[in-house]
Length: 603
Image (tube, one colour):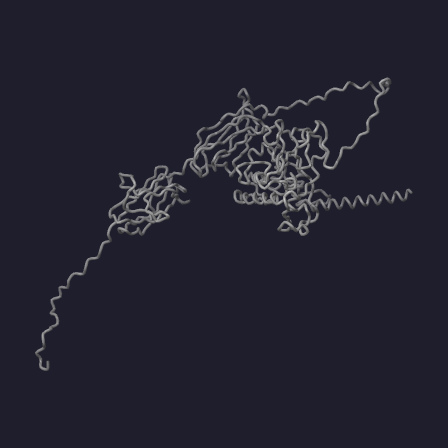
């Protein structure tokens, strides 16, 4: 019997060893860029750079995520819906609308931020671990989830502590923030990272097109190049600051890079294991419908069991005998139960901010394409006007403008210094002229924002000059052989993209448009004598369209003007061409041959 038991024990030990080796091999195959040293320690992903992004600034607030890893077998790509047998594992299938959203986001980021090199497979990997690809593709035709996907409240109970920042608009919670949507954005991050990915004029975190495009911009901030491993790791860790999260996302990224296929919406595989299985949380518990879709209230102080993991029943304790006195040798009677002490709340600098004040210049103005010479700065203050340092201020460019901060972003977050001042990055004017707003807000606190006004004016030139000196002449009813070419400058430098107006005026002293003489032609061949919308090129050069003449002869004036006061008058001449004089009559006196009859004999 003992020998039999010993054999079973040895067999179990061998089985355990084999299983451990198999698990190690599986893990190694699932986590790209992870290797082991001679002692079996992981040497790459474990040493990946840690993100310094605090939970309140990460995309998800470090919310729970699905920890399921891809299958060991690589997927086999198949191009169309309807042939599941050729597709390999179901985990490699991505619902059609969700897949389309990822690819559209990649296309847009390739255009707007080509240096980022964002692959759509990275969005798919994050979408997999955050929401199981929008709960297996349960989305409407426009990409909106059939019901909101809401994570557990971030109340500091097992998760980060992030107090409400959106008055419950996105997550339905006016006390704390929850991660929302298929890419699990917390409201405070969505406030600046949000995008309209499907062109419906709305920015909805529960729409996969909007959320995927926002995630792409979020991953491409800070000038990261996602084709390099270090920047890729940093971007993923900024989404959720966990080395396990990094390894899980990288595993799915590698899996999808090896091939994937499109499946019908609503038929995707929903993961089952989550990073918060067994975590003691307070507030809404994650539903099995998504990455924390909140549907059932959770009793405070109770544990949330993982999917398919019921709570272990406990045996009831025997009731105490009230007639039996306590044994003095075993200790004194149990004290009366008391309410647990509430840990003292530590007030952060952010909690003390009462309002924001302008700490810099007003009336910001820049010429289109130029960098604003002054930078926006905001001071965080307490109710009594005392400066508050170490507070994160978010600056957001608002309005119909293409102005951005240096680097092309419309949002920037800056921490206040010891004087309570946060200075925004340099602001760069776009090509759209007019006014816009840069709003400063306190991250993590509902304090009224402070608006800074800025204006973009059109490009200017202070001088115009012809690039040639040939006379511009034409015959009545003809066309000018040479075209007018000019160069615009501003303070001696070439003035590019400057608007120029060309008008054939009555005279140098009369700027009214002439009704006769030279003219341009429009697209229909009709005579026009004023042209607008002309712009100089990158070198400040501009060549006007061809000029024609009517039957009126004389000297005429073409006037060119620009914003900034540059003016140039060009003289045009219409005259009959000079004719060469006829040859003069001959003065030779030699006699002409005689026509009289000859008198010679034989005539």
